[in-house]
Image 1 (tube, each protein chain N blue to C red):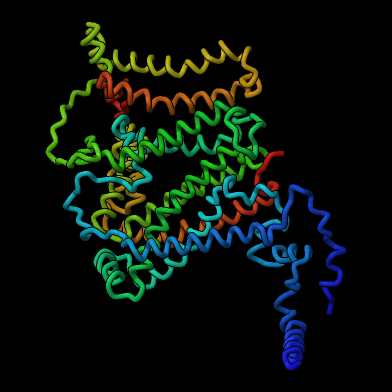
Image 2 (image 1 turned 60 degrees about the vertical axis):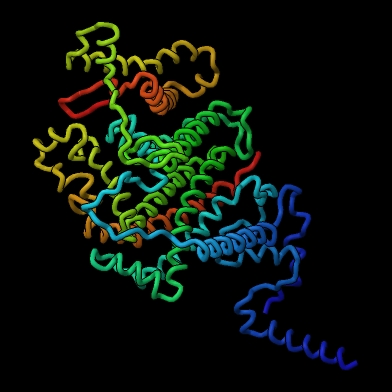
Length: 267
Length: 267
């Protein structure tokens, strides 16, 4: 039989390791083993001490108030306050997934690969942190801890009163403008549809405006090219539509920007 | 004198075992701490050979990786083991599911701790998978040549949500049925394919489909409400379909980490 030990040092002399490289065994495997054992112990102790909840049997006839989705979807459920289900429950989640997948293909900045840096990729890190920490994590927090019966807002120290009376003062944008600016024409369904479409068109036309304005002066935009820029800008504006609608709701009680009652589509 | 004799005898026996045909057929290399054995430790072990034999020094730093990806995998394994054990006692049938939960909790030896571990681990895995994505973004690890592995990672994130979501229904208690009702109700609003979504009426006239019984939502719930058929459907998805898809993509994910140059780091 071959004698593996004898040849050993000749085949892989220790000096073949550059100063930056280490052997996976034992250094990484040791860390993994320790982390694994500690985690297993922790989750076992946790499972011994705290029992998983089991409520009363499923009863389709008794709807709890509030009915909450699993906690990791509560950011999406929170969006339902500001958007209709087709938007908050279908279109926006799909765009989140597609948008996440597109990140590597629209971020051409070669810097900041393999180390933590904010300075070298300010736009990418700020946008992602805003989306992840505020629009995802924070909204989950709001949904879990601050929403009670009727999906009404409750501070953590307030009792969940199922009979809390909240005035329904939300008003569509066209009615708001008609009332406050005296433009009665906007009360018409067709006129508001045209007007609202124009508003949203104007919002997304910011993509082109910004490109015209800055593409010559900002080098990163030239590198990106018009198509990749368009994708980034579209996804960014769509993401920002959520905080914009939140602020409109909190300040002016705006419900819809535009309604298309013929096809059941409201934004 | 006697001690030396015993030591020599011990050494003789040890040598005979270690040099035996059977032993060498199992362990291909020695354990002596020399570079060659360190390399073979990872290279000749089917589980450890997921790792490279040598790696970048900073790749073992917890401050860099947060251990999030590796621990996510550990929790996937914990969930597989505890999940299979739970499958021995649980029947996904409307009449039995909740009773089997009680049986698991009060009658099955170690049933409660298995259920607790499965439940808590599921929550932890969802958190870890989100943390892993956040870490990979902050270190820019999706940058070339790792673009596609990020895409696989996003799919794995979605699969983790789906695994957790389908498992949420199985206890068949009030929490389960209503959380899943809230979640699946979103699909009702899918444009074109949901019976309450935009263009539903038009699609209904066009195709005769897109009724409460046949639309995007009923595809998930196997009926107009979250009922016994939903339970069976979610059970099969939860125990067979999604875990297999996840396992396959985990393999691809790990493989690509290696093929794309190992753990990311400054160039």
